[in-house]
Image 1 (cartoon, each protein chain N blue to C red):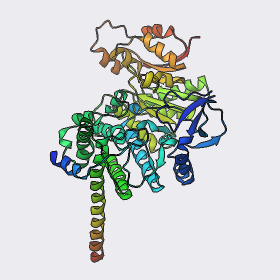
Image 2 (image 1 turned 135 degrees about the vertical axis):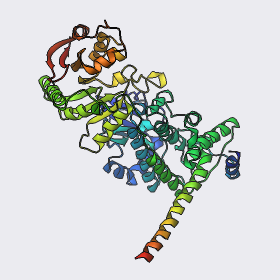
Image 3 (image 1 turned 180 degrees about the horizontal axis):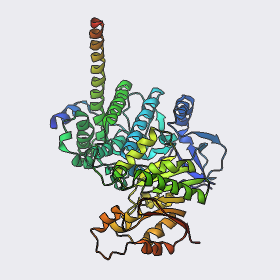
Image 4 (image 1 turned 90 degrees about the horizontal axis):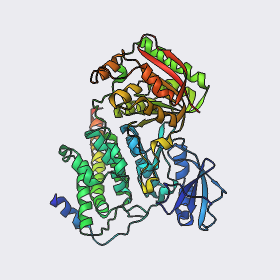
Length: 458
Length: 61
């Protein structure tokens, strides 16, 4: 008996299940013709060869004995870490949108369409977005419009426009609106100065009005689009998405490394201390979480020591910069995520189990947490012991930087606190020793900062 | 706004059943006609511009 994955129940064409850590996809008989067309048309080969679709092998695998109408069972390549669109930066969401349109355009050339355009169909694998829903492909019917058009607008275009024109973290709305930002909401939030743009007017404002009108009057519409009209629509949507850019907004940590209190020498000293401490724990890790990664400088420095580096920061500009630097380089095993650690992604969706919480998805070998703890304690008022408790749930080993009271960044944060605020090394060690044993502590030369190497208590 | 809706209403008759498991939205189906018209006009205009550019570049060489 195999149970579908908790998020795999909406599409009756099939479902995904996990067994012994491997991912399988069941293709039901009802999806036979579409699946066979995908495989025989050359579309699957072309998309897989260009790293745009997750590869699979057809296998004889155990499935639910109560189901008799199964066409195939596919053994799919497993994505090491699932991330969600509300955890991506602007460029990640934009690349996911462009991939969705590229897949749709290529599918149309092979007599197929993608029947849904949810951002949850995209994951980041080897540093780039990849389409993971093999059963999203359906035969193109001459004259039919694109059934996933509204979903594309709600999942991609509306959030990208909001991120570009209001705030870079507006994709957090996808946490609330799990099937995309409703057009009625998007059009009230976007600045009115965008209305004269005919493409935005048509796709957001008028689109929203049409939806309201047809829903209120319970009307049906029949529209016939020629193939070239549909292709032109997809191509114009692509141009539109391509032209949206993230206006450089001033954020708290976006310029951290250019405004840091480290000298070049102490920064390189810190890097070598962190590398040494990691090597003292193990020569190689499956997964390291760089918590408070900023633009990923240290994630890249330690990436050769892990199969996967989860590079987490709260600042949308810093995460975007991290993604774009990695994209242009050879760092393919880094997954940047925008996470507010004081309010990480919860479990969401149907029965609160359709989308897993950040904490349940991110079990790591080791956490590297640099320039992080003073913000939690001083800016967010989280006691040391509470931070230690959560970190100990995420990894057994911890490399953590503690900036002492005399550090200029700490002084800045302390300036708004009472003079007797108990932020010092003793308090830090006391708070963490409930959950961790300290292996080693090293002071970084030329700074007021310490690196602690800790092991979770049994 | 009413003018835009009126233009689109002119094209819209009858009914279409949603396919797949995603509800495409009736208003969304209807607006695609306007968008497709706009997109086709955009690329057609682009082609015309390219032809004109080519003519001028030949003359200059």
